[in-house]
Image 1 (cartoon, rainbow, N blue to C red):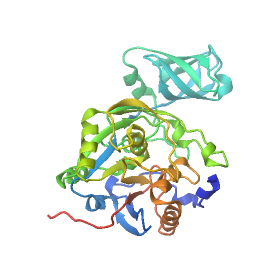
Image 2: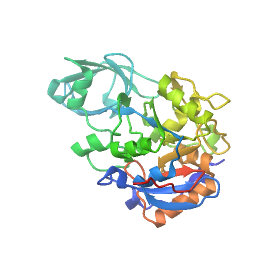
Image 3: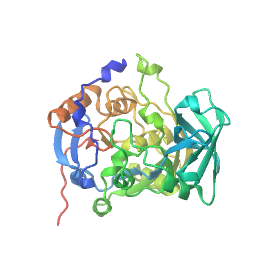
Image 4: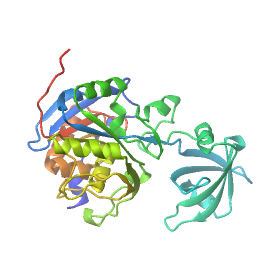
Length: 353
């Protein structure tokens, strides 16, 4: 398939620059993965489309304040360091801008000296290995001097509100450079309602890297090289997921990150194994899903690997038609935008009371 098979025109004003005032008040498009039929709802209605016996799988990664703005120790020239991957207690793989200032041995200062950094190595892909110097706990220092790593299509400067809203309410394990944005719509109250309906909640972890924003440049999508990300599936989560399959319930992934983790860890029988590893799976039309039956996800960039993934689940024509409908109905797109639920059943089962 060609990259251009996944292109659509998006008016710039539909790219959400801020979250909805209330998380669960975002809009929700429910998409029948087989017929392409659509329903327009609000996100809090998601509970009506889940069934007793389902298992909802959520990614509990926590977004780091991974963007560091500082200066050169010798000249005071501005520098930006973006944390990508932790190597050990003091070393990180990073993205540095401008790269010409980040030569081996050069030193930088952040937060008035609370954090210092030295470029230890320059990698083949131009990322830098940085060694940090600080007093106390690194995460505490980072929380004080770092800022929220909003995606490049959000043009505003990060605010204090973003520290809360660009994080799921169940975020737990530090490590992501970007949020698992499908989960941003959930509130504790909504999760409680879902559990009371008889749906299991299973928490897994995949640390989202900047590769999630990496464009597909190859004309033939099969030539695209996927990035890899660390994941962990606790034993309790694996038990809940496999139990749902055994009893005939659905495995509902919250976000493409949960989906890719489950499909990476699944055996040929669809059962997932507990443990950690690295996921570099590239899912596009033609892929046969082993574990995931339904998916909650936001609206994705044209020609992106994420749009290719949802097209694998619901069909390319169905998804492009759904995106045309979203544009006509003025849905909000991308990280702070509205959500979709790709499912096999449009029946609404409202809770009593």
